[in-house]
Image 1 (spheres, rainbow, N blue to C red):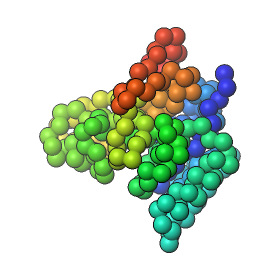
Image 2 (tube, one colour; image 1 turned 90 degrees about the vertical axis):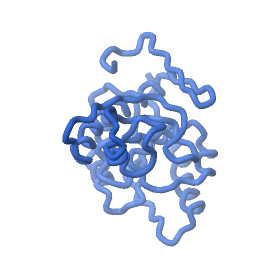
Image 3 (tube, rainbow, N blue to C red; image 1 turned 60 degrees about the horizontal axis):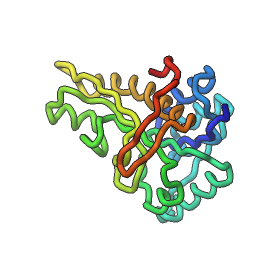
Length: 210
């Protein structure tokens, strides 16, 4: 099977990036990471990429207008013929022009069951709201922050005495599972978008992903 060519955009430690890499290297995920792009030079994710022989790009946003910065990112992605952009903890507001340039080719992972608890510290929001169920979502990204057609979700029970840290850790475990799975579904052309809804063709999909 032809491998889908990815770019992964990150700002921090890159644990979801590592999950993608691990699934590729095990032969489970039919993808290739063309490059990892970060807006933070100190992002541990860049070092993770380098350790696995993946091109790691720090693109400095300092002193640049948002549109100009994302035009620079766009040039790098176009040079590498990227087919799917994965935002895995990329902590920067993205302009509408970028989404137009890569329409339905950008996915994002968010630590909540969207459309609930958008934005920063979603796990803290869930705890403060008294939610009994939290979780994570992989969705196609749109100009509206933490919105867009939902591909995969996984629920995580909120336990008595949970802190933001303990809940975040359990949600992260599930993020590491559903993000590579969503990429594989897209790689196999099993995902169709109809308005704000996604349909998935599960027929014949590998049991190991279920």
